[in-house]
Length: 201
Image (tube, rainbow, N blue to C red; front, top):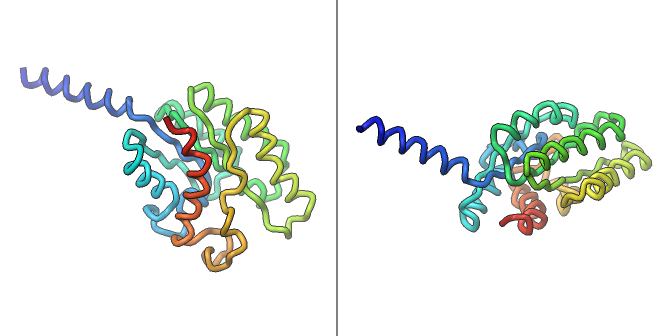
């Protein structure tokens, strides 16, 4: 009898876990808290904010430093199958731009990832980026516009620039000049929250 009740309890716990809406954060080093304690990163701060206002949501941060859209496209299907997120925050593309990869391919990869998430039943927030001006005016402009074009084509919500408000402030970046400090993470969260909040049930 005891083992029967134990099995029922485990089944109930699993059902409760599956019923908890999940937000999947899928990005690169800017979302993986590179160079700072992971609990200081904006994704971890998002989880804390949701606990205070939307306790039904859990956050799974599957971001990896150095990730490109091609790598993300390879990893995403298994993550969608495992976590079945209600919301996916797609924050990839920066490394494509920094490496000067062909922008049409970056756009196709983002579109395919959005399609995969939508087929899984997940709403998508696309997070855009901008490049430093030393990459040339034509490339940087096309790169910036790429995210809006993808968002419009796939009909998903867009945060145009994750680093909005801190990009020109050297004191908000680590010594490499690329990765925000722990002190900058609340500003990144506020940028994400501005677009994410309307998507929450």
